[in-house]
Length: 190
Image (cartoon, rainbow, N blue to C red; front, side, top):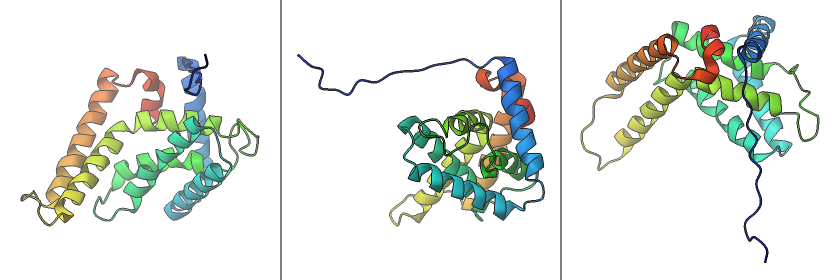
């Protein structure tokens, strides 16, 4: 008798403080290397990397992580979200790595070329979890406002202020209490 489901393999690994420091250093180096690029070139570089990566048909776990970059780029481009100052810089600093064509494992390496990107995306998403959560809630509220039969809701500008304030508070708690234990070192970079 054969199993009708497709077999899967779960691979887990733990990154030590030294490992995290290594990846943090790569993020810092990428941002320094991309310092002469303006914001639009960074976001265009990220979009290009995503397009190329998806065209290479990487493993599903890589595709899943690549999709996590979309909201980070979107929050920079979203005039309603109006992310500014240090908040904006945090997201740009994180995205700089993905705009850099010179990464740890050459992307053209069949089967494993995007594994380093998947690891970095996982770390970046953990480090920017308050931003991603706040933006997701903001977008959901905006979609609710667009519905004709929706009950009255607070104006978008008010919700943006509330969501961004909440984002900053959660970020502060994460730094103080270590909400994302696997991003202990990464948090200090962001």
